[in-house]
Amino acid sequence: MRKFIIALILSCFLTDATAQRTKEEIAQDPRRSASNYMAYPEPTKPLSPAPKGKKPFYISHYGRHGSRFIINDRDYDYPYFTLLLADSLGKLNDHGKEILQRLRLLREDAMSRHGELTPLGAQQHKDIARRMYERFPEIFKGDAHVDAKSTTVIRCILSMENALQQLLVMNPKLRISHDASEHDMYYMNFRDPKLKAKRLPKVSQDIYDNFCKKHIDPKRPVELLFNDTAYANNAVNLERLNYYIFKNISIAQNTELRDKIDFYDLYNTEELYLNWRKDNVYWYLTYGCSPQNGGTQPYSQRNLLRKMIEEADSCIALPRPGATLRFGHETMVMPLTCLLGINGYDLQIDDVEQLEEKGWVNYRIFPMGANIQFVFYRKNAKDQDVLFKVLLNEEEATLPIDTDCAPYYHWSDFRQHYLQMLDNYKD
Image (cartoon, rainbow, N blue to C red; front, side, top):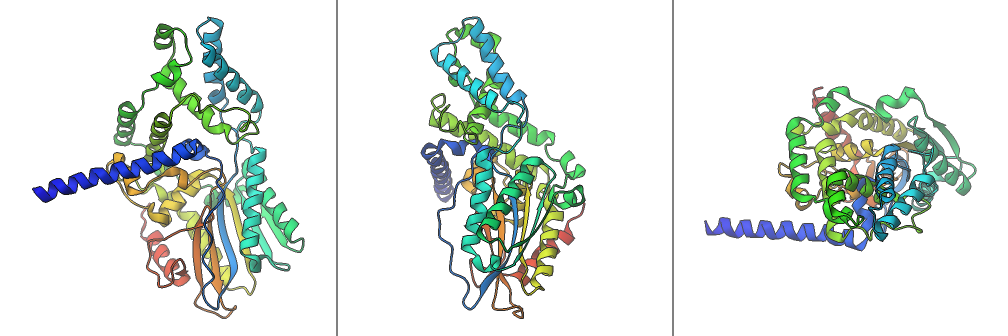
């Protein structure tokens, strides 16, 4: 009994400590609270040296488009017109009037550009391509071939084109092929109707709703906007207003207004953290290995993973394969990360209160511009022991398979493990 009590105390301590670390990260950079709206953070850790006697010869990549505007106009309209009406009735205080003007600027900046790539998003992909070239120049030397594919969504196409432009600036001799066609959507942006139908069953929805009721109190930040508490409580859907204002706060960092307006005076660190936790739980329940819906949602990217393996096998057979670049969405990057088990993101967690304790932190997976890179190494074209490493957002990552050369893995071990896993999946 005494051991159980000690273990329980230690478990609570570890949970609190992990949560505190995440909260501290958000305090250091409030933009992290934006989850999938977080602007791409540049990598900070140096890469490990190449395996002895081997050099990089091929890159296989899947990346999310860069920073964008909010996709739906209602996300801008609802908070703006809600506060505009309150202002017309004399119900906003000075802070509320200031927030209204910031919402107006964001809304006007995004007018008729909903879901489109922002200038920051274009620059992100130029920078990612530049670092890819600088880190692995052997892959891009001479007339190396770069094959690029994008989903048919314009922000993804423009992300691809900006990356390719940067590579051509650095080496005009590159042979580049690029395409965006429905022909490739079966793996580039696969929508599995069966898995989608099981994504958020009632048990998951109830867990999410109960979590929000327990942790989210929308009254304090939005009541700071009004001079009439009765009006705020009776005439305004505070929960909905909080949701949309927080969404606008989150997207602002991706626009050209990011250095001109700042919403973070509306929320303290605790409120930013709790709003982020709500999103963190939602993404886990819908795209992670959540046991509440069977833990199979990551298999929505089974076609993509199989295609990456097949194309890698084909390219390894070539004397100078170059690079395969793919540009899509976070709803592919996140489940693919979970399907691969990168950095332990294949965990099944019953209690969503423990997500952070177990290491589930969504902004580390899928910020704007998020990407997964497989970088392959060998001595020469006849070398059968091909090694590779996986980068998540350009940082070296781990996989749930054995290796004697970390952070590198034997490609033969990888393909055997994951092809068997894909073959065992029953639709």
